[in-house]
Image (cartoon, rainbow, N blue to C red; front, top):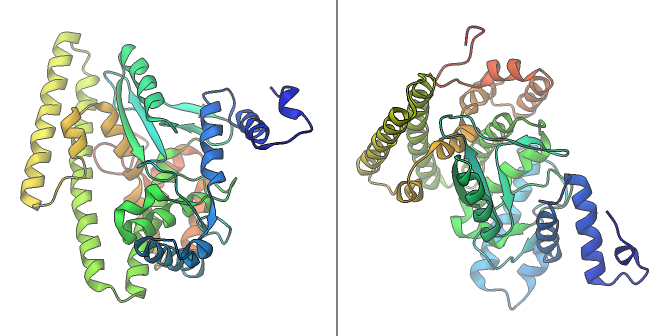
Length: 364
């Protein structure tokens, strides 16, 4: 894949960029992939050490305060949570856009299981990420043209699993310092442990550490009022997750019924309309804006439900493991590592729930 021009002795910046793109293409196989290489290079090229950004008199006061909290959370991640002590999240990149990547998630027209894409480094995952929104939506349109349900969502952060020193991104700063700390804890957890091809296991483990980490971080700072608000928001989000799980179960039964396609489409539409009504009802009862309002505006589909499942179907199992370990994170990490070495079915049986909301059994 390398050409003579990319290996020429005069290694100026454009040549280095091209060489970097080629090498990363080789790592992730194929060239969906050139855009991923260029996008990653652009993010890494903008990195600046956080202490230098804080010390710069031209840095806006609000950014300086936020980055000071980042330093606090990053130190807490290693010192208290036992997350990797490396160069990740010790630099800052201003990327000049609201999201760093846009993820495309798809599911077949009559299925609640996601379409998966497989790559050498990360294994099989239930999404494809694009550094350019237009490219993401173009790919989404291709998937829709073949009949898939598709959703496209902006993502403020991602992890390279320790292959590069991931920076704090400007796209991460708009969510407040609590969410920012949670993102750092979540992404560092991927660097601690990552099982190739098991997105549900990886994401639920990271969500569990993220939520526990934020609780401990707020307690350590004496921010009890913020902790109560965070826990209330987490409980509300769990209500939405339970609602989505219930409707996924209904749809799974519908899609396995083998009724004629016109009837299937009609029943599918009725089911999603009912879900939308229940989501609006939950928003009214909670008196809090729904975090899924964009989905309601765009129209719900199978892909929306599969993306929630990827992050939350195994969280309760990991939380149970942490309780059984007495809240000792080092013991918890050791137990999760042991579980990660088991076959996928054993992992699922230990921590994941099926669509009925209970752990899968041999008869499922």
